Image (cartoon, rainbow, N blue to C red; front, side, top):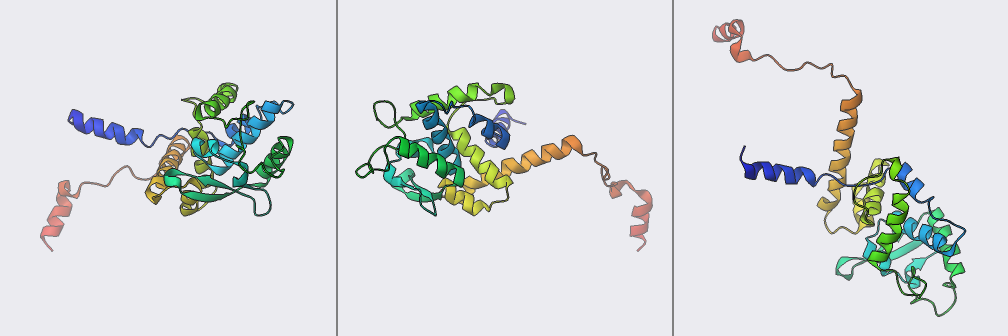
Length: 229
């Protein structure tokens, strides 16, 4: 095998590795913020929205109060690449967190629609770096739970996609949630999930099927029989 071929195979293989958290690790992460503090309540709401919507970090940075609908059916309007907006439903717990957080910060009052949904103490919208810093702080607290690899908000996006897929959600719906232009981009999660299932089966299953078929080209009796037909 040439070096170029080996390099190509390595690149293709590495692309199937998607860092994500298990459902248990995600739940543990969301329990880390101190809910007795203002920042802790903001952080748990921020991370819950980031996970629940599968949003890109910049999409969350750009969120304004007007982009959130708390009435049934609750949803958030995310503006993605190419300024394309998509409506993503919010689940019950996240809706409750948002309602309490927005009430505490006076966001439900008239004239607050342009206010950044997630902001710092100076009322400026959180930046990508700011959100990454917040996430990293809580991820460090659960590193002893098998969490490894580079910490970025995209980990929560990947986690949401994998959890939806494992729950049996149609991949077309997952594509719409994530805002992918092509279904082929979303299919990478299915490929990773299939590889994970294969590895699990290999680790617990004893292979009882025949190892291989006989080479009929070397079976003299069979060859003689076929020649005499």
